[in-house]
Image (cartoon, rainbow, N blue to C red; front, top):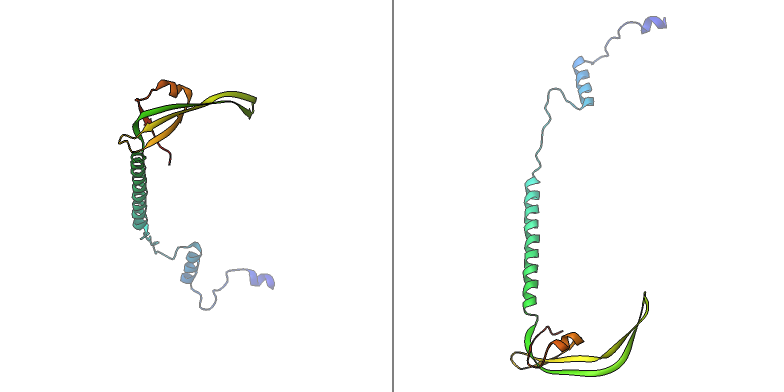
Length: 150
């Protein structure tokens, strides 16, 4: 008797229609009948694009401003070419010993070489310590380029 009940097509349930079955299957697949999917454009795309362009212009402008500012600060660094008014040598017979990766190294120091350079307007005299080769290359009255330390 059970076998007789399972054979053959089943009768549809009360309130069941073929059309509702199609909608259910379409809903499972993500397609609701013949409706076409709507495509929404991103309204913020233009804002993002213009924001990026404005940000790039601001960053580029900052680099240009910084370059011009740094360039102008070099011009006002106080460097000048003045006249050597005196040359002094202070003997200091000493030996400098350096400890490094190569071991001990000693250097004989003869002394300090000092040039006194006067500003072009004559208001100040700067002391410039130099090495022996620079000291031997100049004489009193020569022009000498000086960058004073702050």
